[in-house]
Length: 142
Image (cartoon, rainbow, N blue to C red; front, top):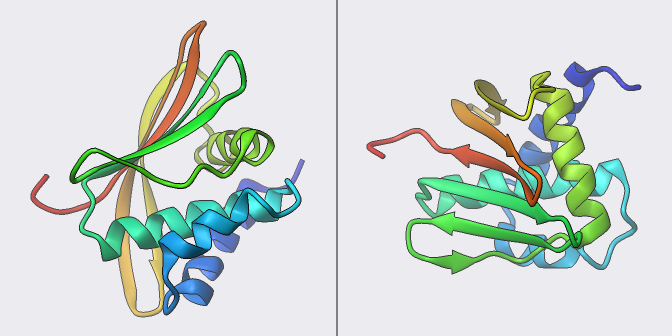
């Protein structure tokens, strides 16, 4: 298993790499890419950038028992592009590895730094028999 700090660093590097792109447009292409850990970490970085750029309060990715992955953002009720079932599962695995959260529920602050910015992103995981969710809550007056 890869070091979680390497995944964390990779997300920060990808944030830096994609900082000047349209994250929402880039997110919509991830489902067509091979389902790799790289694609999962790219999607996480793009979600963070979209959240920051769009002044989002929270972005949530959830997977039901059927395997269907849905993504929502809280700033207005909006569905974001899904990364697809396989990459969605890898995203959930990657976030659990980065944050070291193995229990069914947990919260943690995740420090992210890219370019000349840094932030503490609040990460929350929830898992029950029907659904597993990871939510990113962005800093601000939320």
